[in-house]
Length: 186
Image 1: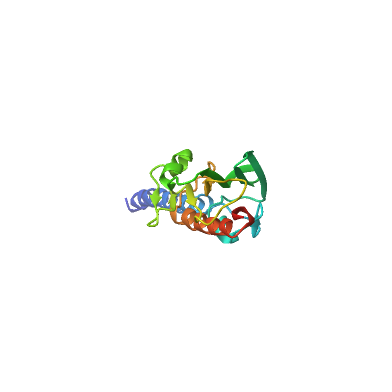
Image 2: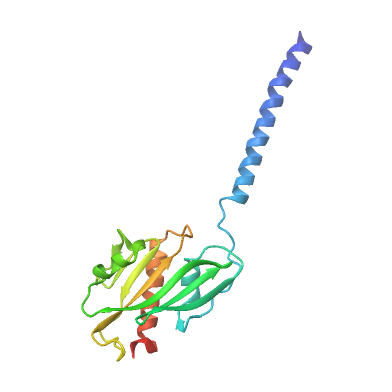
């Protein structure tokens, strides 16, 4: 009976140890593979399409990947868009767009779907969500090519899984101030 009791005990202990080892292994593998964000192996330049922005602010809203490239796009006479690509996939768009003078940021924001249900800044110059934002430059930002218009900036992530309102707000404010200090504001 004692040999048989020991055998039973071994059977009970054996699978329990195996189950514990399997759970520990699964936890270790999931910690290694899914909890860490993908590595950002690229370097963000200080100037994006001619506008100087702190690279860390840009990198905070980009996904992981190996390479970063940018391209300027001018879809119409009043918009300049700087598209950023990680591993050849469009991931972020920074833009400057002229709108009719006197429009409120809240009136411009619906043209950018990612700002829906966004947070408005106290001064009502910025509206942002975890994926996008719209900012209005200072009234002193004028250009002879765009009389009676105000310059707005936008930051839009593109299907990257980024959802970070604080990072979007910081980038949007910095980008807007950089645009205000650039040739775009005459």
